[in-house]
Amino acid sequence: MSTATTTTTTTTTTRENPTQLPPQVINSKPAVGATLAQEDAQASKLLSPSTIRSVTLNNRIVVSPMCMYSSQDGFFNDFHVAHYGQFAIKGAGMIIIEATAVEPRGRITPEDAGLWSDDHIPQLAKIVSLIKSQGSVPAIQIAHAGRRASVYSPFHGAECLVPEEFGGWPADIFGPTGEQYSEGYGIPKQMTEQDMEQVIQHFADAAVRADKAGVEVLEIHSAHGFLLHSFLSGNSNQRTDRFGGDSLENRLRFPLAVVERVRAAWPAHKPLWVRLSASDHKSNDGTLVGGEDADGWDIRHATVYAKKLKEIGVDVIDVSSGGNVSQAYYSAGPLYQVPFSEYIKKEADIATGAVGIITEPKDAEDVLQNGQADYILIARELLRDSGWVNRASKELQIEVKWPKQYLRANRERYLMTVSANKKYE
View 1 (cartoon, helix red, strand yellow):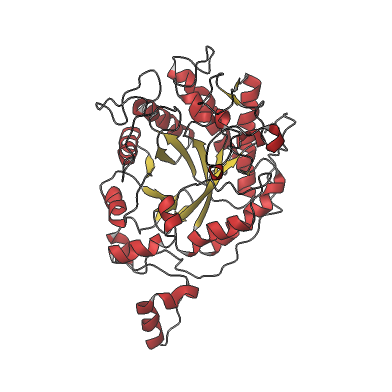
View 2 (spheres, one colour; view 1 turned 180 degrees about the vertical axis):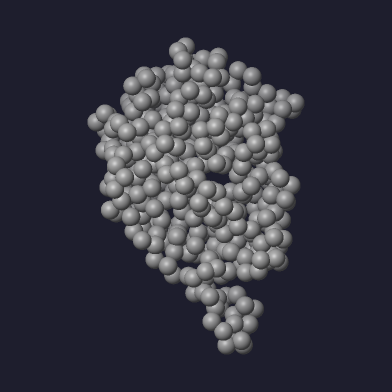
């Protein structure tokens, strides 16, 4: 495998694995979040196990990737250990670590996490080890912000360009063409084919580093107006060469090249997910899910993309929407993105994850039972309630394994264990 020639990053594609930490097994089988009775696992899809390639999730509740904007020079730190650890301890089936940049210029903000150097591996491995110790599956999303890079984090109250003196790179932003994302963002340079090749290799190198850190599932960020999505959509890709323009085949070319290189670098026994936006929401035409946008990006284009991804070896499509145009037409509410997941699952014949204001366990169970998705991704609701898995267990009346350290908070099971003079395994 070739090594990227850019001078801005440190890259490697070697397979040595000297820094991976062995998982510290704290809780024994069954793992935290797993159902305690076989008949219960059959009664609930949400709380049932699922296997993709060689990886088994104890339940189908997935922590959606959420940027924390808390890194320095791309490094994970103690905050991230505590942040991701809480979801593992509370029984999430899989935890997707936040959008992690494949090169410094691929960060959304200067505080984004990164995986462009081997130096980043040990801190990531520490998080992975903790997640595994509770029986949860560690995943990570690798990303490149493209023309949405070098902005302040939401903590600053507004999205606007970060100047060089404050750690930004406003003169070194790029995209498919030179169109600005929106007011306040940088004006991107049009990528050359050499730029594209370097980014493709950055993604592959990041995948190798994730494997070294012990990550079990990899997700490629291809949504929300970031680099790969901006190439996919005719609303942002006005190129006139073989990588853009009116031809959907041309617009798919670069993102598919990224995924293909990553799949080759990522171990064959490990699952690969891709997050995509199913629509730019540029139109509010009600005849098509998400609106019709023939020259831009709508559910039909996303379905073609999903079919191509399946051919490459992608296992699951994480179906979101929007983020690529500043003027979008949609109404966000409970389950509002589930129809996108259902459409792609059926039309592309591929497993999907549903996301977007899924807050109620009964709703999540119904989505799975109705065949609208295979996994439920939860974001802000888990920030409000990291014990959502236990809440689902209670509301669906199916008992799941608690961490033994927290058993006294589960009064009924604690008293049963004590009265039976039995060890809680």
